[in-house]
Image 1 (spheres, rainbow, N blue to C red):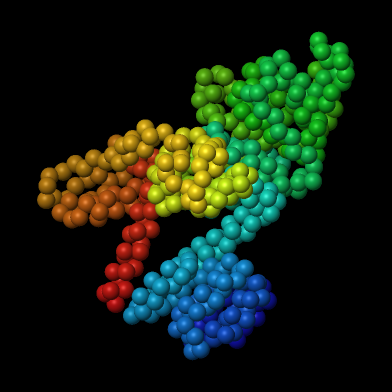
Image 2: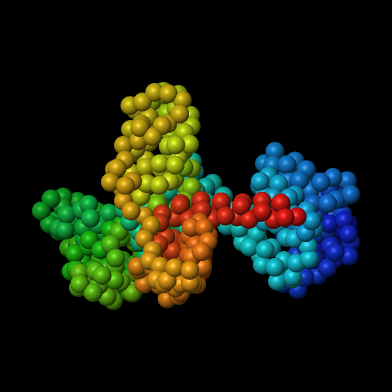
Length: 484
């Protein structure tokens, strides 16, 4: 049976019609369109059409097990988000579904709020995946390393890119060196309505102070020694498109005033010229410094900063991107092994563990160089730990620092060594793994769910936290399965 909606956001696969209609009604009240299928065979027909990406799937169907549907679609090009529904006595089946690739599960009976939250999260995930696909298509990201990966911090970046792309306001990108600031600027341009116009990038730190004004605004013939002919600047070259000013905080304070005037008027005055010309450009700028510190130290004009910092994107360091480091490394390995004619095809488990635990102070650029060097120097089928030239000091640095205050046998308050506006009660008469879990989850909650922020407080790498949480979830599911 199908609902009246012709463009459903969710496919409800449930053989009990009353239950299916109830789910559909709850979703409708939340503004979510849905369609109903009462059998697995009908569901497969709908899913193969490729029009629905999110599925609310009851595992006990009259003609097949819901797991069969997940496994059947796993072998296709359709990347579907499954939310499985099971009875309390079948939690072990939910565990199997999660291992098979299901996104989340609901155990009957469940409250309406739980249903809506889970479905909304799945739809948001699909929206982000669509954004990633658009970016990958427009940027050919199999060749652009900055957009390999789907970690939580990068999903936030993708969403920001999508949100700011078609605005005319300036964008300020911050992040450590090697995190992909220019790639981000290119992405903003490529998914905007300016995509067919020029994208002009200028590195303010790479140009001599006496030439940077000319590079941005252009000059007339004879404006200065060596100006043998008139030349357009980057702002005029980018007319109709995007002008990217990298390392903006390196710009001379006097030139900053001229840039501010350009932003206010939309007019370019070439060096040595008495007249101005109108240009239409979208300004995107970036820095690896803290712009607020630069403003406070009077190295960067406050009025210019607020003119540029209308829309902000902060890129996460590689150490905050979890398993993205493996995806990036695999991408690099494939490229460089082919270039060098080597047989390196995979990264060994031990090398992966090393990569996940390493801090990567040079970010993506350091990873790229490490993999490239390995591909040039070494032979073999798998990339092993000894092939990576990493700074051992980073690997031996202490990563876990927390202070428990209290008396043995009593509950105690927890205070991290960095400032944290919360406390948590911990029963110290329990295994250390449980104490650790309680503390880590409390810090994550205090950071509004942000694992990168929690990692800074705990002085644990985000990848370590992600792995621990994954292990806790699996352990909890298995315990529920045994209890059931």
